[in-house]
Amino acid sequence: MADSLASIYQTHMVKRLESSFDAFKKSLHTLLDATKGMIKMFEEDKVIIAPDLNVKKLQADGMELDEIIELAIGKGLDQKEILFHAADFLPDFLPMLEYDAEVLDKLCKRWEKVKSDPKLELFITMLQGELFDKKKNPGGKLVVFSESVDTVNYLEKELKQRLNRNDILAVCAKSRNRLRDTIKANFDAKYKKEWHNDYNIIITSDVLAEGVNLHRANVIVNYDSPWNATRLMQRIGRVNRIGSTANAIHNYMFYPSDPGDAIISLKKNSLIKLQSFHSALGEDTRIFSHDEMVHEFKLFNADVRDETDRSLELLSEVRALHDTNSALYRKIKQLPPKSRCARVSERLNLNNPTQGTQCGATEASVEMRLGETLPCTVSYLSSPQKKAYYLVGKTTRELSFLEAADLFHAEADEKAVPFGDGLQLHYEQVQKALAQYSLDQQSEAQEEKLKIGSKDNDAKKAAAFLREIRPLFDDEGRHTVDRLKQIVERGTYNQLADALNRISKKQKKEPLPTIKILEQLEELDKRYSQPETSTATKQVALTTADIILSETFI
Image (cartoon, rainbow, N blue to C red; front, side):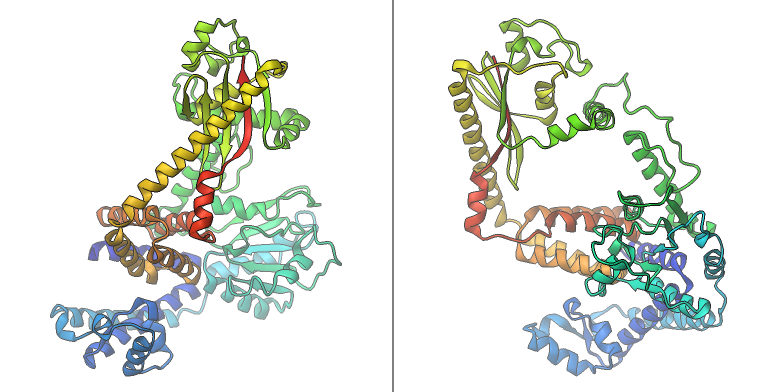
């Protein structure tokens, strides 16, 4: 475990160094202060371990150890569970802390002598030249992204002083809501009120990578390479929007140094991730590196037919429809819920549906294809908890997405047929699908309820893992960890504790870079950080589904 943590800290520190010298210096001092704080606790024989209190910060604020203990007791914590003595630790623990403090102190002093910042100098030169070239940047606006809040603040301070500019706006999680109107007035081309030019350079963390329009600008600078390749696409999406008056988007990247990248492999991993997007989705623009290859990859492998190929093929078909017949695409997208139709069985792709071959069909061949005799109905049902497809005929069974897609698939020239006397049967079969949906949901809920009693230990392990890794992240990362920890401790989702424990187990076997851990935590946060409803509301949701689409084959 010690080797694992050492690897995590190494990755974290390299990440900070590649962001900016200032961020790296601050991390060094933070580690030194935390180490000295731990040594002080050993010297006073009062070692406080209470992650919920942020003991390190309280010490840095000048609070004495007895005061911290009193604060913990006041918050309902048991003194016996948070207070330890020096004798409770291995004999060599304190000497190792003292050695670490000595090394960190020397590093801090050496780095304080470093006054030049080549990366910043290059950036300033670019700001005084090509980044505001009128042909490239007709709007005179610039968006600068960094993964580090410390780097954002550092750039704001240095650029205001060095360039003597007062039109620089820095935005982080703490200031986003307060500055929302200012951001819109200065950078949002869809802003309905009067546009302002009080700010022409906005420097921000990834807090503005989603949900905000910045498309009065058409030039982006990534002051450090994002660790999640998807983030890069989200950043570009802030300026690459309908309403932009620029002819082109210019995306600048500061790559990690060669020695740093040899440790964290950021360039290779980002390039592989983005290349997979290009290969699957047909992207035709390089956005990270000139090494990206576009227009040179097939969407799917025609020689190997599996679920991935079939899914990509369907995605390709939808994309082609969007590009070639946008009116029909919008018409389909705007179909109202409970849309229904009747179709003749002869139009089913019975021999090889993935190739789009039409053929005649007897009732026997339809039975082989569907596992049902005609008439039968396919229904697409949805609720916040579950989306499902059901085939109803003599029996009722749930279909996979690909099975349902094959049945829903129709050629452009196919016409619906009248229900005639079959409308009542259609209604009855849809009701059977709804009834089966409710039964399935109740069964799943019951299974989940049975698991709850055995999950307490899993939740404790997950919470312990989150406490352990929390110090590795910046403020935004810690907010993510804190939200997940609250959800785990409430016991709302057993699946979340399972997912966190899998990450922890994998981390012990093969240490992951800090950013990789954070990416997985952010994905879990996005999935589970939803407003909770009452038990009664949840029970209603389990048994209620919307009918999105239904088709009866006759």
